[in-house]
Image 1 (cartoon, protein in one colour):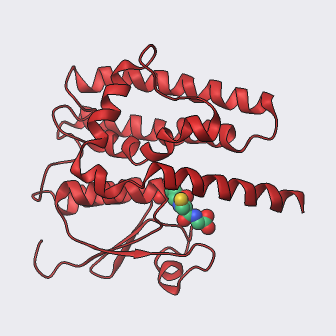
Image 2 (tube, rainbow, N blue to C red; image 1 turned 45 degrees about the vertical axis):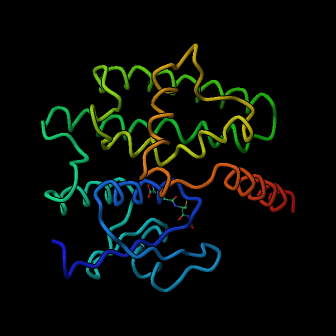
Length: 232
Ligand SMILES: N[C@@H](CCC(=O)N[C@@H](CS)C(=O)NCC(=O)O)C(=O)O
């Protein structure tokens, strides 16, 4: 597929969903053009490429747009099956399990995180944190089950679940400062804690993930702007 192939990624630097796609492209060793988008002033290219959701990431492969981070990850794996490592397992049952956990991350982890981040009152915040920590605890079990004692959810190498969770990592690392609690700790999630160390040491992570300090400042500013616009 190399040669005449053209890959363009529409994204914003702080988006965890965009980070997922960057991670996959880097892990596969694919070169691409990255086009930063202004979400307050969406480009015609973004609006015509993702007319339904009008969101990033969008991967444009030889002029054809693909939307939604997990759809893009699977597309990359299928379209570039022979390039770089496989992201999804080859065994159908293990593929199903990997898809289950990615869906779990998107359905269950993100919502309580947002509640803890944006909550007005202490009660709502405490509930968001409680739910987020319960989900992280379940993911600790998922890592044990999927990795079978190896370094990653994908086993010896980074796979679909690693990328899906890894894309969120800069936000998760900023959680203590943004939400007042650590999602990972040695007592409750020793496997995930070690996984974070390994994941952030990867070259792909160094290139694809935003700087945590910069992200925390950005998120705090966004939160303050949101609070102001609600009060108006
Ligand atoms: N489920 C989507 C989420 C994408 C998403 O929420 N993108 C945000 C940036 S972090 C966006 O483009 N927001 C623009 C908007 O809501 O108008 C995915 O996984 O790709």
